[in-house]
Length: 314
Image (cartoon, rainbow, N blue to C red):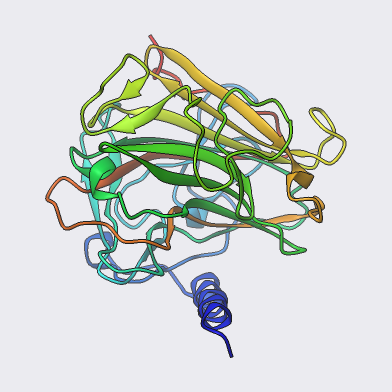
């Protein structure tokens, strides 16, 4: 058996364990994922309005409208291994709780939150969260070669993703992808495959330890990211994978690729968000500021993109 096949087999086994595990280990001490399948909304708290967000724990997930995790300790599954760590903290941009992840200092392992198994019959998912990077995360991730920051699974094995990749000089760029076929051009509206493993210098934003231009996002700045994956033919006959990124001053990027960007791919039922934070082919340094935060994780099933959370923009 090849090294690559062994790694893929181990990842599939790890994901299967995640999806069958029960939640309940305190967030500060969790060292492996504890995923709980969605249940009926016994404790989720809806705001006013038919399309308002319900807020609660993953166990109480109510997908009749947009559902947001309250991000308190124990409210979401944790997925860390290989030296990665998780800490539940308070005092986010909205004053609420958030997850802080330090990525693993070893290769071919994972660090983030998840997995999130979705109900049956999902053909469109809007996944939104807010994030910020620590003061050495961009440079500390210089070995993040093909870092699968978000992985979504489908019934037929397709994997829409968000990837992070170092650009050098203490900066990271973001791509959307179908499997490992990426699009770093953040102005792309469909289009041909480009920049599979490296960007081409045309990104609209990137994360840097220290901002070098107005488009650079510096350490400790919260941004809103929404990943919309859909079988609907609204943007392309095959469906689409779309990312929308906002700084608190406004939108900075909105780009998409066809679902069949990797030509054999075909949009079917969307089953799982494997993780936010992701799978690391490379490794992170142990520098004290090499961390990232995750806040306000929101799921909207069979709906259009949500836009930033209320209060995030001026």
